[in-house]
Image (tube, rainbow, N blue to C red; front, top):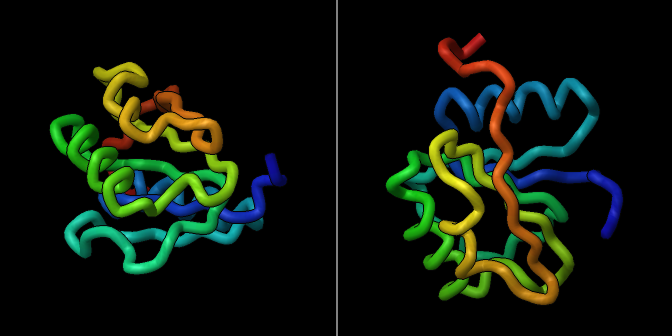
Length: 113
């Protein structure tokens, strides 16, 4: 797996935007894509992908990413930030080149600060 040189985040709400700001401050290149824009037309080339969407949207998003073949052309880790879910909603993405996990924050994202 490559160093964490870039991150792709789907979901530009409080969690996605907050993570994006923190990663950029740490010197990581971040692409933040609002879920409402849909999937990108090109494959996602970041080695680390964060799905920061509502719990109910997580598995359908994973299935759309799989069906569009947006991931898996390189080694990638895909995580979600859904506090009430385990890694199961990301199962459609799991493959030899795609690792999946959940990433629960230690504190809530109650504000955009």
